[in-house]
Image (cartoon, rainbow, N blue to C red; front, side, top):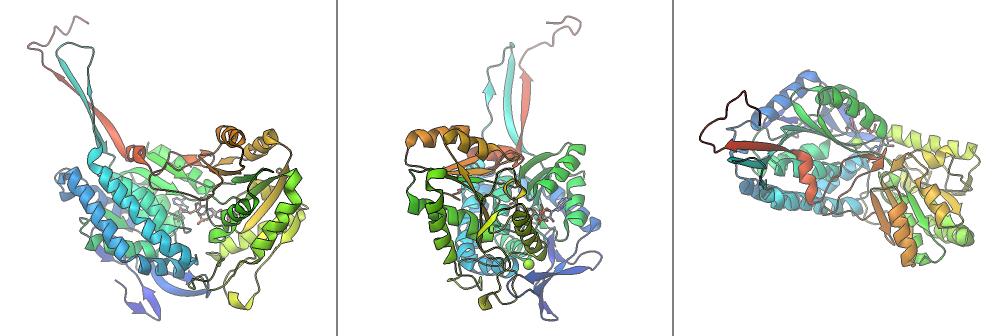
Length: 500
Ligand code: NAI
Ligand code: MG
């Protein structure tokens, strides 16, 4: 599958257990954000390829297929085998991710090992999904429920953490007995194709996992519209999420949506200041700010504002930029050119709105950044929450600092955005912590920590940040539907003309 063509690594798609080119023979290049040069050639799928992938997934999930005939225990064991196979290749997968999306090898090598836990966790859960027997209010009647898979699940994934965000969807989908068609981002398709090879070698039956690569409008939209797709599990921008939700409605499809954020990281005057500074820095500059949970609004109590900003700038300044493949690098490039331009545009918007540049504020023209798409870690003070820089998702290393007086104002400002993905609170006062946790409109609230996620803990958004949750025990139900069975044990069917 990986023949070198003209210096670029060539990839094929994975449909029905076969490695194939796009039916139309078209391809596109994937770029390395550090060198700004193409490194891989990826099939550019179209409607016919989507159709083939969905048909393969649908057939693989039918009654009588090897997958559908497997016991839940065997399915779970297979997912654990997949986890082991992925763990054995985690370092290689991390390198592919870094080459394609420019995130730090230091982060991706940990992430590629950790994401195997989703397959183990949901593998373990596969045979613990139980229906119930209902003591129904009718004589001579046995009433029980079973949970059944939905069918074909479309997993549509963005570029910031391709394999991790795939695991959040695919692990519960497969554990529940569904089949899948995966559409990775056009900026980062390679790691998902490598993943498919590992899944094939681990013994996942043909057609259970399919990968179609290409562009959102050409491949993603066709996948969402396909009548044999039962559910769309999506992570990405809220605009695309809304378009998918609308298209899915036409086919009455299930959806889970994990969308953007403008999360407040809130520091009170009694916080352990060194810890809070570290938490704020990792909240916005980790992954070059390209995370849905980025703590992009720093709300800091007025009385400590100046001292906190000084300490924050002092730490952020030390960030080593450069080759993401080096374990010493702390801030890498932006993943793609449109995103790079978008971040630089927002920096100009902030300046135009009167924000004060306390750090950074433009392209990073440092020798160690080479030709890569680097943006300086940027901190703006003097931001009002009504400004665009405080309201709109930048998805980059740009922090807005907003002062607040007291707890009530922190809540008011914290909640005054359309998003509600996450929030951080830094205080040593238990009452403050608990009142904030109760009143912040966010799917995740971190107290004296930031960016923690786990396969065990439900994750998702309030408001425009999404629908449904991922991870945790209950979320396997997002990939199941309940059937209720009624059995009469009466000797005689009653007179149909006498209603009881
Ligand atoms: P996007 O949301 O448009 O793309 C995400 C995935 O959806 C990709 O696989 C894409 O091909 C696919 N897609 C695009 N249009 C589609 C459609 N009409 N139907 C079905 N699938 C479709 O995100 P994009 O263009 O990569 O980035 C744009 C912005 O989104 C970023 O600037 C950032 O603000 C935000 N974003 C948020 C993420 C998050 O984790 N919340 C992740 C990535 C981007
Ligand atoms: Mg790339």
